[in-house]
Length: 426
Image (tube, rainbow, N blue to C red; front, side, top):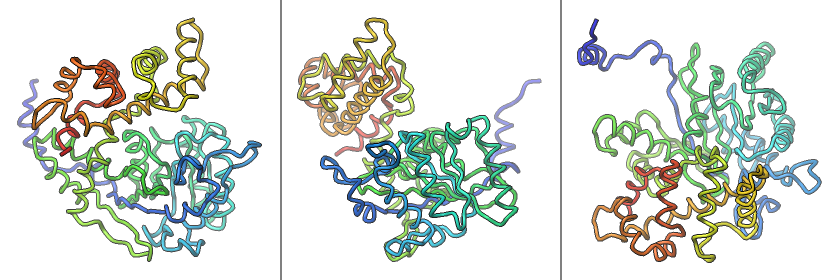
């Protein structure tokens, strides 16, 4: 039987299924703990002025503990309202009751560091929460969900709450309805993986009406993940519906309300105009131009080809990364040429070099916008013009036109976001 799809769409338009009705609403929260983090002097290095969650995962010189355990002790005390300096940021004050929390650590956090962090969390949260670490040292992706469900049930029987700490686990195919709050405690990260983490608070469950997602900042210069999430959702809806992005952002404002907590502990909802302005800002758009999920799963062959361009086709003063990283990147290439398996550290150095170069490029889009005399410049036109003077283009952007094309082909750069940014820059 032939299905008349237009009739099907008309019959079901604006109807909501029972499954859709069961999905909880989501509230997004942002907390700025940068003032507290700045006091953790042992975390601040000479060349970087701000603390970060990534630095909080660094082991000490003897590898038997964390370099900055006080950072995490103070953080967990703040989350449960036991830190007098930051009691206004207690989760109970900001989002209300939290019976089951999922905290995501930085992707670069090692299993060993995560174990030390979990020990600190248990010491600070143990009077209320059972802390369970989910990483490769304690479970597997296949078993993590079952163990989490068991942990929730065991805690419930004795009247306790659960605080999960995830290190490289429980991002996909992980459904625990009891999780009511997700903490994003990392400094940056690919939008796709952030969306996966966010969805952990949206698993439907009996009586569950609301899921909370809390993005915590300890660096005032950190990329605004919340704004990127909202802008990405609006952009996709705009493409599907043929509508203006700003109209979709107004709908997103109702669907994904954003709250903030000031230093006095007052919770307030971000106004619609401010919400849209932040989502449309360049700071929100630029991170979407680099596809980090592809970057960190790139094959050795593709990494070698791109890194070789950086090391051999770009003048020394425009190369990204420090001298040590460039040396490792060259060693990675030499191993590939000899048919040898590259050392893991060398491969990571090559990826880091690529990441730095791609980030530098997308942050220099305001410079290449004027490469062509057009009010609506697009990347394809700019690259065509850049072919006439590739050295000049490399001096301005740090990369050659061919490197950009290869990065686009490898899906490391998102052309649609680059074109959007080019149209936004004034």
